[in-house]
Length: 87
Image (cartoon, rainbow, N blue to C red; front, side, top):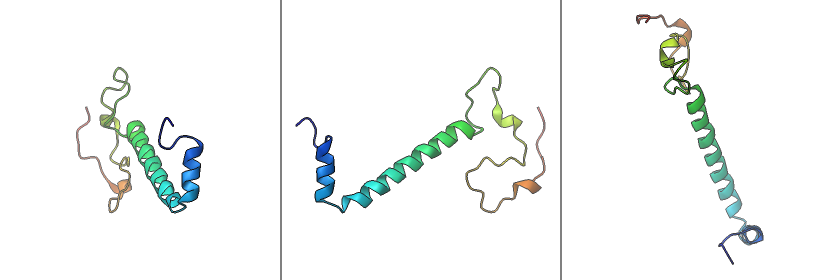
């Protein structure tokens, strides 16, 4: 045996212990959501600059009405006004 839970051994182990099925499901959902959130941060966050030549400071191109936070509880971004200088 090369590994503790390889191939058919995994399915036999889960069939013997059906209480592991919800645990495996919750762990899979948790890992999947963590990966999706990291991808969202990498692709849509203004703090990340993938193209330094054409867009070296992407945070300066945001208007005050752009919502870049994942969850805005009490902030209405449509009514914000620009209170910073334009560079």
